[in-house]
Image 1 (cartoon, rainbow, N blue to C red):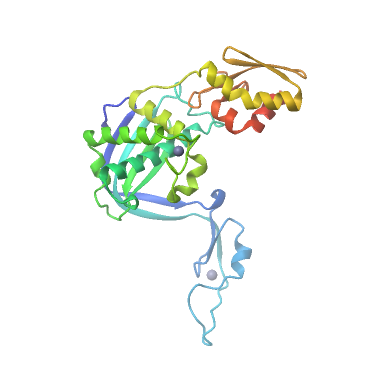
Image 2: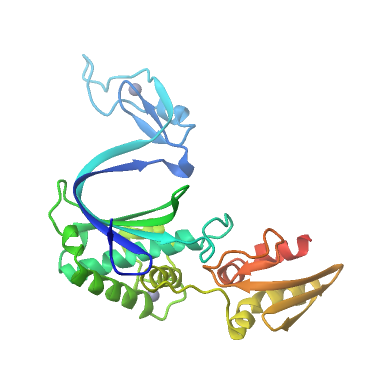
Length: 309
Ligand SMILES: [Zn+2]
Ligand SMILES: [Zn+2]
């Protein structure tokens, strides 16, 4: 990996490398596949559905569709090994600065997927190529050697057309990060919309697209900046829906004190804190800290958690 000169980002161009693409099926349950004829249905309980499926090819002596007494294999993943050129970006994360290991925080996956989608849009624009000629993938790597996000831009053409490797130069890299930042910044939507990150080809990730999370990750990667607190105005705005629900549905009173929300009544007395989406929890599992995104996007679950104690 080459040092990019940015705070937490390294990159490298790789020629003719193998990408393994795996489809794990709905919910990761894989597919039920007949070993004899190849008929397949998603999910692990596909045997019943497969029983009535005739082989997709072959005719018997009477020119009727031939039958197959399927031999099922359940829970199979379907995959392909694809050889192409790519430029890979490795973003290193410090768990003391960024929420990496909080299993109940969706920030990291929202940030990674949104940043990757924005980088693809930026790269296509800079290289002036057709949108379908460049693909993007991303993954988290959390292990003993550290915590990383990898974003890889690769040529859609098998064996590579050389587009993605053009990104691996300092000059283009600067343009790429600037353009990516523009895409994530210059919109008025709440999370993502068809004017900034959404398009038909990434429809499976629409629910995870969050341009603010992507921007947080980008700024951390290139400048090293991270947010550890939110402003008083943000706290007020973030807690507003939760306060309404607590007031009208439970009669519990709430009061903002500095950056905390004091909740009291019905045997509950707590001081709740609002965290920036990218910040790690500081109070452990006490349940008194909520990320801003949670407070604005998942009010029922937050209220339930407050009432639980
Ligand atoms: Zn079969
Ligand atoms: Zn938008």
